[in-house]
Length: 102
Image 1 (cartoon, helix red, strand yellow):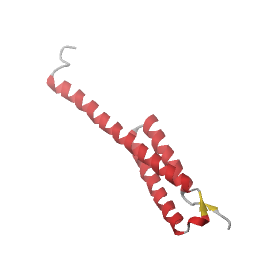
Image 2: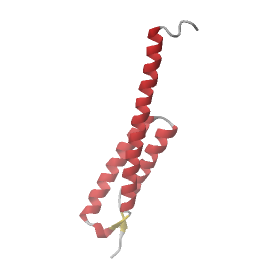
Image 3: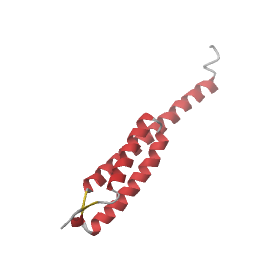
Image 4: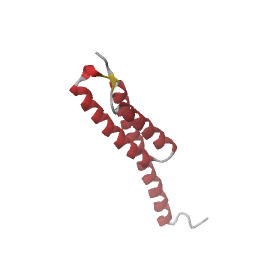
């Protein structure tokens, strides 16, 4: 039987990689966009694979893409929490008058 590559598997992997890289190098919220795209591609590819598992190869790319998407999401959420705490501390110091001496 001739096996085909799984449609959407490479997209899921690519979006998972982009979510991690963009979160770490660029800015966190853009990583969330690629996380959503990666998880959407992974679920579509998994649905296609489960209909006929013997016909397709590349299911490991779907699993890897899903894991990378979740890692990218976790990093993006940590980034957003850090930014909120950072600016919250600055606003608290300004409103408390701690910068009046400078």
